[in-house]
Length: 311
Image (cartoon, rainbow, N blue to C red):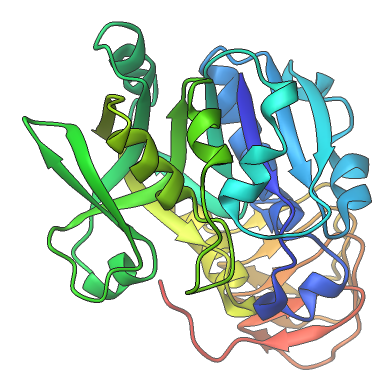
């Protein structure tokens, strides 16, 4: 079974967050969350629960019942966004077997996630955390660090450590047994962010004597935190796919118009023979500019000039 959290407001993503929940923002011409659904389907998952909140109706409208991915999707609303553990707590009556949990605003490049299932099925683990070796200490400080012994057995998880004691970083994919809900119910609200942290739940679970394992299955994890991240992520995507550019169906452009290292989504109309480079054009957008566009995200509502590309 699969769970994807898609309830957050993403206030740092304004102006996108006024119209789009982060998980349905486009990556390579498709919603970010669609890539996660494809990953779950490939793992043999048949049922997915999606936790929605901010603009949740847009998530439902975009994904429907999941038939497109060979999945059955159920939606659960999180009325208040009080942290990941709070969202997981909304799921107990809807989940009756081990489940993958994905954070819906992250693009993951993974190795073999099925090894997480093997660790639970054959290795005796009650929970498996997807992790990676992170060379950037600041990236660890923004996430959580995982301490292990005897190979991959997790002894401690530390949320946003000021002084990381290892380079093993948690990445936002988890595999939980249903016994984990007992720990979630006993998770206190934190003073740091006034939320219910999933790392606190995991530590309670460890302290209760359950076997939590770490699996180094994440090659890259790219978060959507700020508007320029959306352009950065799309350009990274076409690079990894070996594409010079990605032009969707029904795109109209005049003779002389040039598209380089950009994603132009379905139905966009380019009115003038300009160059569009290192840019992202949303579906159905009419590009009226008569000067070249470089490093731009263009939607029907707004134009964002991205001065820095962190690729």
